[in-house]
Amino acid sequence: MNNIIDVKNLSVLFGGFKAVDNISFDVKKGEIFGFLGANGAGKTTTIRVLCGIIKPSGGKVFLEGEDVSKSTGILKNTIGYMSQKSTLYKDLTIAENITFSGRLYNMPDDRIEKRQKELFDFIGLKENLSKITGSLPLGIKQMVALCATVLHDPEIIFLDEPTAGVDPETREKFWELIKNMAKLGKTIFVTTHYMDEASYCQRIVLMDKGHIVDFDSPDNLKNSYFPQKPVEIKFKDKTLQNEITAEFEKQNAGYGYVFGDTLRFFINDKAVFEKVIFKYSNNIKQKETEPTLEDVFLKALKTENRK
Ligand SMILES: Nc1ncnc2c1ncn2[C@@H]1O[C@H](COP(=O)(O)OP(=O)(O)OP(=O)(O)O)[C@@H](O)[C@H]1O
Ligand SMILES: [Mg+2]
Image (cartoon, rainbow, N blue to C red; front, top):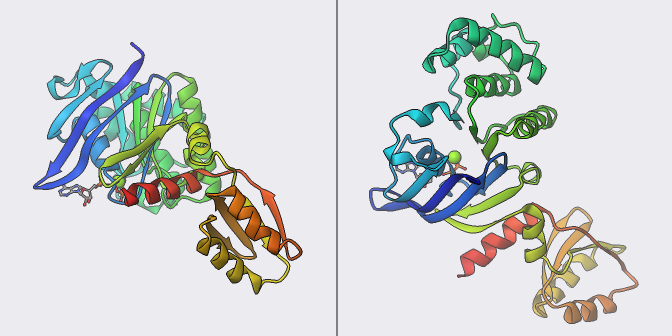
């Protein structure tokens, strides 16, 4: 069995509102799978169905080939879920939080202690276990929450925005861990708003208002949305920036975003683009650049909203 998660025509209704609208995708064992989408896209709702916390209004979800809605609790040990809002108790110490998580999975205390030591070593976390969790910096708190999530050694790990608000250095460390867990054969299902993080995923789903806008590897998405590479245009004479942007728009050469002194431009029509740029060639410098996942995401949503 290759697909560790199979989602078929999943819908979730809250009253008359479709939070998740007929989505289908699969996740392979050992994959780092990213779920991206703006606020309210339906990411958390989908995870909650996959974890068996809420029942779908339509469709089916299979984990390790087992229908989640018919599962009799066997799956509980298969999955670990780090929810978007911290599940740690602020007024408990780190050790107490870890012990509490382990006992929820009926782990004996000596095994909890052994796993906790193993995981803290793996993570490189040297925090004093008697510290009150509420007093910890967010990055450390999220690391502890991750330990609590994987304490019972689950096969599938759901991480709902685990790095939101965490500083870049700690985010990088967190992702090293995620990658290491995947190397051990664990399947990671992660949501994030950080596009740089999404590029660590083998495949990503782009969600918008309950449905899947696109679903592929980061490289395939970049190539399919931008067969023509974007260009960066710098202006010697900054007053020309608005003029040339307006001219591009008027002639439908493409669209762009200005960052400081640079226009990042996405070409629709190369011939028109070159005709416009030729007029200004003494005043600008242009170079081809790589599309980012952020570019893909913005274009995908633009295209989607035009439908
Ligand atoms: N229990 C609920 N009852 C009613 N509406 C809900 C409920 N849970 C979620 N929703 C709505 O469903 C939609 C999807 O919510 P969800 O939390 O899944 O989005 P999300 O993609 O995780 O967003 P975010 O990036 O902000 O975490 C939102 O419009 C939300 O308000
Ligand atoms: Mg969410």
